[in-house]
Image (cartoon, rainbow, N blue to C red; front, side, top):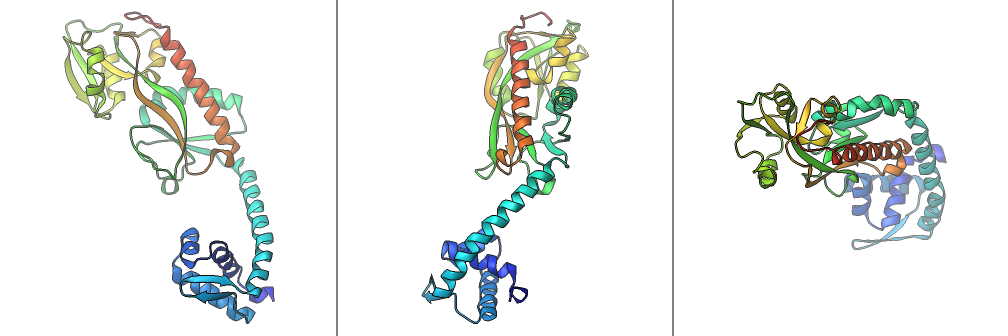
Amino acid sequence: MIERCSLNSLKFFYYIARYESVTVAAEKLCVTQSAVSKQLKNLEETLGCDLFIREGKKLHLTTEGRTLLICCEQVFPQIDQCLQQLKKQDHSKQPLILSCEPTIAMKWLIPRLVQFKQRYPEIDISLLTGGGNPNFKTQNIDLALRRNDFDWGKAIYSEKTADEYMVCISSQNQIESIQQLFVSGSREKMWSQLHDHFKVQLQEYEKVSLEHFYLCIEACLAGLGATIASVYMIEKEFDFQILKMLCPVIEDGSAYYLLSSSPFEDDPRKIIFKQWLIEEMQMTQSKFSMQKVGKGS
């Protein structure tokens, strides 16, 4: 008998019976209502009996339907558990694909990935650069590191990793006659949010807008003026004492989050990477909290 019965039609019956609705079953299975109705009709024809009594828009299981549902309730959860286990086992064979905003990726994350690999040699990280709302399916990514300056929706799982800290900086060898302040155009509201914090130190500077933080930092390193940047973007330059702070570090009210399309608990690697990321970002925060204005590291 089983060779004549479609497993797909049994799955469709199972969802109809669980929710007592063709409409809801179609939504859960991401198919049309007509497809669900057709599968149910084919199953009833194969079995030679009705599985539901139809009263208007309501569906009620027949005696045969209740018997089949009991069987499905035993089989389908076992199949789902097996598939989940196979998926977890397969994680170790694939790289964990992470999408990260470009400047943070280049200036902060990449230099640290070798430390992560030494600590967790069994986990491979594949890094992609990108910003904004991630499309996990289209971009084929597992995690995304983003700042919460947009709404990623309730369907995305998120874990906070660190608050954002901004600082105004200049090169230790800045050309004194040049009084320019480079501001990144990638954060449209940054200048209006932070202007009051820095207006005393920067009142003599002329604002110049560049497209990305990376360009602003490079212009600053060349001695062409000052810039405002995240502490996570300029840590290496402070370590080498080639930048100086023009004012104390401030929080701008935003934070970094690690995003996932599925629960973090479904993939142990995500939990490990999240905790490692939190620890590393806290270390950077601690380093800058001890910085002195006007001096290097």
